[in-house]
Length: 202
Image 1 (spheres, rainbow, N blue to C red):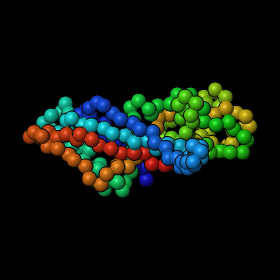
Image 2: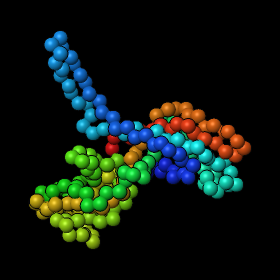
Image 3: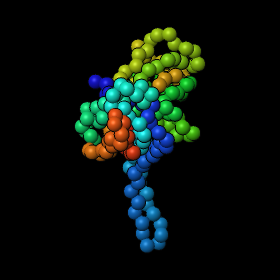
């Protein structure tokens, strides 16, 4: 079952905070040396958003009709920290020509990944795939998107064939708190000064 989508609302304000988070076990000794063990292979991402204007009626279309219900409804649907939803980061969701893997003549399913600088990690949930390429040649068929984030071929790509794709992905997330403050500061107008959530492992 596909989780609900986080709504795109015109009342969202700046700034947006995005915090990649790792976990490291560190043991120090008297000589000053340290032994460090990474506990996460890939980071979790924490987001913090602010909404300066949410409308509880349809009288303020510039803020999105009933935008309060859209956001508050998602929070209630998730039961706070319990449920998950899909957040599409406007600045980090579209990949073009992303290298996925190299075929081995046997494997048919490959996880979608994205590369930032020299760091490659799996993506949370692929929303759509525009193109798939084998050695740079666009494939018009022979592949499917397997939810949530696998590219599956009907026949295994040949050995040493370079697999790449154009796709859009979202972060599967949960809220960080079981309560959140929705402030009614004028008739029909609401705001949320801080809404925090973080990604979950695929």
